[in-house]
Length: 268
Length: 202
Image (cartoon, rainbow over all chains, first blue to last red; front, top):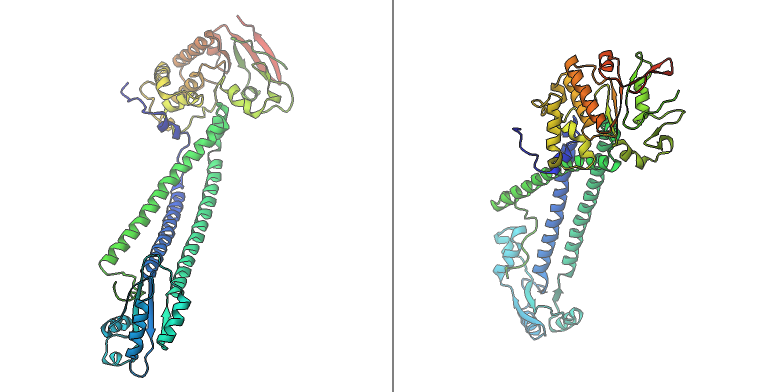
């Protein structure tokens, strides 16, 4: 015979059911669902990673403000605060920010005008802690107040907490969306399988008459729809990956950079 | 009415159209359930058979349906191989048998065509090949030669006879007098709800 041997049992196992008309619609639904699911999942990952990198940038750092009295913060109080901080155990660095640093910090919001430079800035003291150091913040604040009455200590905890909350909200809603997508997809596939069962009644009956076990027929159906769903899902996910990659590409060219948050503090 | 098929026997079921030949066959191959009466197959009472027991019993049957009932999306080869696949055989094991059988029924050149591109007679031969390929214990055929010319009809009856010689019990419902006269097998006639023994087993 001219025909090549059928390679394996697998290829022939699939063919008991024909591909019905309108199957493309189901593939499309599953593909779109997979696309949306991948987008939601990508959103979760991005939110998580951003929150973590912000947190990592802020952890182990404190900021002390010496509020201005009149036009500028009192130099004496600044010196006293810096000295106190430097002598505190766990602190590896404490130093005041220059006026230029101050201007750089407000620039994203206020711009760089003559009028901005004339504003009464508080003096900021950047404090870095040794890795793992957990100084008693309340006690440090009390001591700061006595050395420098206009000092305000900020350990970024509120900021980090809010960030964490935002990220958690994003993650939770993304998971809720994922659950909805999974539910909708499952319902769609169940519906399509039922419809398919009706459409293939003839074949199912014939297979039964020929001595096919229920298990064989069920497996044929499962395999039939699983394969279609798998292909569609892979296509959808590939589209989503493409979407993320192209968004990342745009960001690299500075076209779609998400800079809704200004850089935090001066570059370390 | 009552009748029995002895193991290894060859029987023609005749009778006018609408007498119930097809229904009788359907009852035997369990496509329909009797509203009353007793049918026993291979010593089992079909009325009390469990669903899980059906497949193994049905695999001992070969059925040539009057309307063929081929799977339209499968080639002639795959249609014929279907009973073997259902029984769990591997393609490599049955490839030669199936090809040989298809050649025997004159479809060697057309075994990779789908039913839609085959003539009625060719489809009928595919249906017959599918019914006999697994060498069933009981072969039931409903008008198996209705769409083929006399030569092919004779060839097919030889296939049935050959199968019968190896132990398969055969029952053929037909109108075809030539087919019936070509062997000296038993003939039972179904008419007006009664079965008449026309010709005993030779």
